[in-house]
Amino acid sequence: MSLKNTLLNDMKTAMREKDLLRKNTIQLVRSAILQYEKDNQVELDDSQIIDIVASQVKKRKSSIPEYEKAGRDDFVQNLNKEIEILMDYLPKQLSDDEIATAIDDIISKVGAETMKDMGKVMGLATKELAGKADNQKVSMIVKEKLSS
View 1: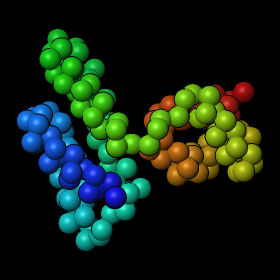
View 2: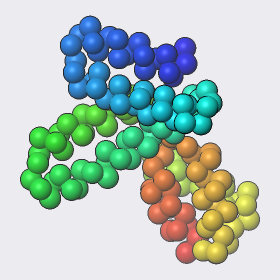
View 3: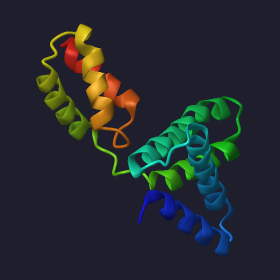
């Protein structure tokens, strides 16, 4: 079953179970997917849908510090719950060690030696690790490896 169908079925289940947070979260992701398809007149495959889900997770993670500063713990809790729901639709996230190993392989493939080669490494890393690792974490590990 495609990821798009999984999202639809999970939304229907959430509606039946009256799980408002899950239903709304899935509905927002589905709407982002449908909007992208409509704007670009394409049919997205699972890997592209994973990219959209990952961007939704990133948006939520980036707004948490603002709500924490404002003392809105209720919003922070909701965002964390939404992130948990969305993580179910992403591939298993890689650990730091797994990311480091993948980056070592990419560095050797590209033949990178200095920070000047970071663009080449990040270009390949973002493709190979899409949805499996946070790009900020990948970037940090690449910088660490290329600067040493």
